[in-house]
Image (cartoon, rainbow, N blue to C red; front, side, top):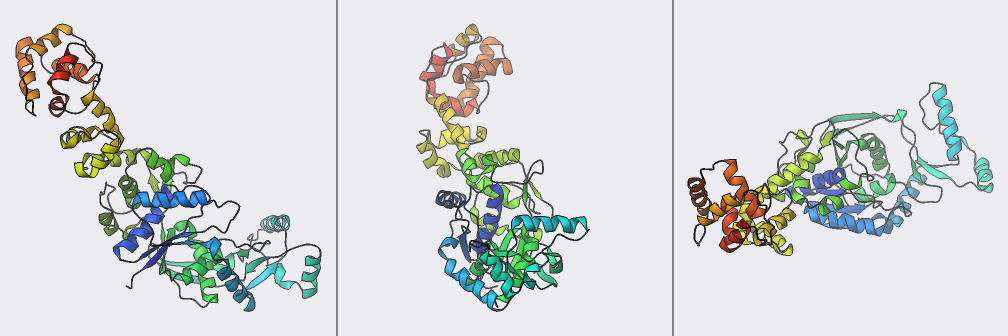
Length: 446
């Protein structure tokens, strides 16, 4: 296979969500593995709804995921290419003007349904004479333009779904150009795919029917077809489709919530495939797991709880060097010993701040049994402390008081940390140190 050229083509009309990330990652990681080219194409021909701020945020989100594009293209800067293609289609009789209003089309659709007929466009505009068209335009009507489909079955081999076929006789001729001369999604997408030499169109399965239409337009423009791979869509855990209105599932929100990019990427790529969903810490390893033959035909459910679990597992295995600069930015870099002591109790890296505060103080101790803690203080080992100090101390406390088990450990934890849960005190105690430990055991904030 020659080196692939693939594209992710979001509309910058909002922030992209985890479902969009799935498609972006499938494209980018496939290109990465095959040493191809990943194009970010902004489908921003809808000038009213497209915003540069959304385009900028999409680039930030993709960079956060570790998949910066090799090429960035904006359709709003390429209109002359679409004009030329539209003119070619007009010249060969495949793009024709239509004058119906939205209300007229809706009336016809309802009438066809009432008669038990499929609600497809009846091609009435093709029967208009030149004089009739001129009269309509004199009345102030401006045409929208439809692509005339060949009423035949279009087939292709899909890398995910296998052999596919769509009967184009059951479809309406698609509108490619609006009354104001602006373009809908279809024609610019195809023109750019041709011009950018896109080799693989990897996208959601909601575009399967569109593919038959697009294949006919590719052919009408005399272009070679790319290969198609229609991947299953992500839904919420309850089966609801993802959309931009679910703002908390936007990549921006997930990033701001402190999630690791590789936990998001791991779930977005692996869910709904034959691969076990697991945290993958390396982007190249994740790229090696892309296999279109292993993608399920059923929708893939995105479970936010599963994402939290993946995130925690990723952090639990994260080496200190990978966390070091981020801990420093949080003013919580307590060194490798601190990181190894606390990482097993984190679900977000930022949670380390809480435990650095426990180590450095001041912590207000919780004193449940002063007499017991006084006895424990008397047998507190001398410095220096290490990983064996906790065991040595608790054995001495048990011998001095006769207390054992939870009744021994919990009062010590509450006094030393102010909390009833947390990292192993064998690792935490040397970090707290003798001075702070003694002060907390006698009830002082330290």
